Amino acid sequence: MPVVTVRTVEGISAEKKEQLMDRITLALKEVLGKNPEATHVIIEEIPPENWGIRGKTIASIQSGK
Image (cartoon, rainbow, N blue to C red; front, side):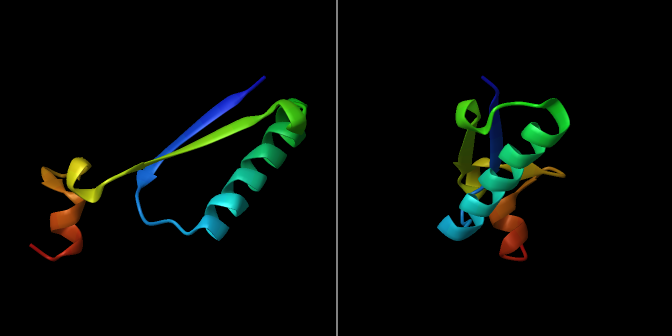
């Protein structure tokens, strides 16, 4: 039973999440032969003020600060 966790900044549409889950599930089937019925995909959305890169939060980068 594979479990895949994707961490990303919040704001992804439900449609995009479904598409991502479908493609990840398909990749596990094609590459590793895993059963799609037993594949779990978890999307963890992190608020942009709680995620940092290059010493700044994503929120400050998005706002141009």
